[in-house]
Length: 103
Image (cartoon, rainbow, N blue to C red; front, top):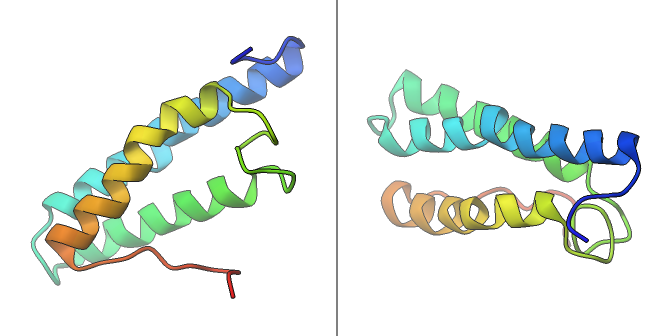
C-alpha cells in the first residue's frame, strides 16, 4: 500500500510529498540554472540543502525508506528528483551533496 490507511498518517504522507515540490525541487532547478558563483546560485544551493536536510531528518530511523521498511508514495514521488539532484549537479555544477552524519 503506497499511502497509509489512517487519516493522520495519510495527511503526513501528503504533506511530505508537497514539501518536496515546494522546498526541494524548485531550489534544485534554480541552482542548476543559476550562473556559477552568483548570489542566486548560492541562495538556491542553501535553500536546497536546507530542504533536503529537513526532509532527511524527518525520515524514519528504521529505513531504508522515508517511512520505514516499506516503499511509499513519498519515496516514489522523490526518487526521480533524488537521482537528478545527484547526477545533474555533479555534472553541471561540480557539486555533490554533503554527506552529514555518515562516517
